[in-house]
Length: 151
Image 1: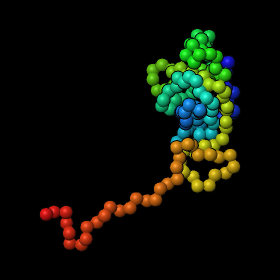
Image 2: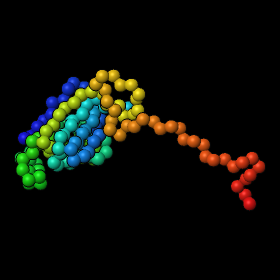
Image 3: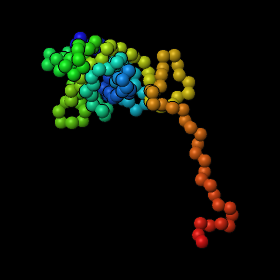
């Protein structure tokens, strides 16, 4: 089924791939992805993904063309639950085309931090790659007084 996602009000200029596994493909968006993103398109059980690997900008979501739908159906062996197409700026001279087929799509608003933050408010999350800080590195071993590294 061709789908044009309905995005909530917001400034969704910057986009990137947050998660890409066999179970879940997630695009994150906000006006600036430096510290957090505020919107996720969560494609469950992705079957086909053509998407810029690096951050991209200003996607325009549209219905997939018949040719795209037929091509994806041949590639995955049937009609996917959802098929989302978009054009975006990926830094090249021409706009790039994205195409994602999956079992279903979920549009999830909410703050997702891209850095470690100890205490989260209800509804806030951390990106999957964010880990708690480690203990500070220990100083390298030093030689006993009077010993230099020379012979």
